[in-house]
Image (cartoon, rainbow, N blue to C red):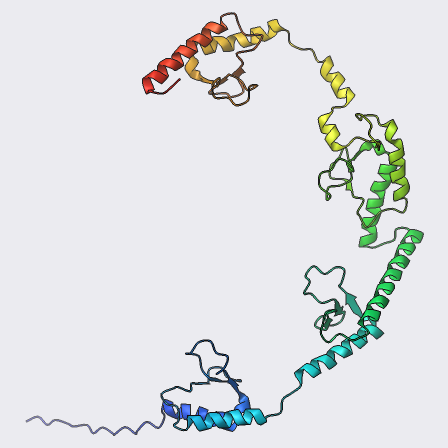
Length: 371
């Protein structure tokens, strides 16, 4: 006889935790420390969003219409609103104005410690002045907290900047080119201006012919990458005299067309492209031209190929747009072409053209197309 063993099971303890307890604890925390919670009742856009959120932990939230909200929720909200109204308000606007006044005073007393971005800023919302040691300290001229003496300060800064620029330019002109990246660039550009001054015929003068203002005013003939702009910051001190010399030499241009009101010593790129030099024109004239007999002998095999094998040629007489385009082209080599109006065409060329017209008409009739 088998004996069944019965194992006794220890009864489980009742659960001491519930979600309702956490919700009620949050309500108690809101009642005890309302300043530690965000009140989103008036600004929430989604009705499902929480009404109160912990400032230090956004995952802790409270809903007024929640299922586990306490019964005296109306009294709790009234206490919360009353405590919020009694809390002292900080004058944030006054503090901001005081801080900005300190920055303006610092700019007035120590302008060398600030960057002046008024002339070089590209975004109108960017600050007008920025601290050199701290870019977060910035000032705007159109600020509501700007001081009354802002206009006087701006005038002082403009005068200071103009004097500094004049002193720097005078120092550069007196000392010449010194070391440094900017000075090296200036020296390189001044060397180009010297080349233009000494050898103006080696440069294109595009001042009157350039279509875009950003295009260079002068460009080397042997190297198009070497260019000069009159709007450059590194202009030499003799730039006005140089331009006067170039304008005065307008009558001595070697390769120019009709002279206008203002002459220029060298040719522009547009004139260079449109009008070849006399030397090039003479070389072209000296080249021997093929006679009609030579051209006829060279085109005769092509006309015979067109007569014997017309399927190997494209007939463009009725489809060409440009009247100067060839009338026939080889299908295997587009560079081989013939013109029906050529002086070197053989005497039997009209018969070939009539034969091709009949062939085209028969093909159009067979396909039902209009020829």
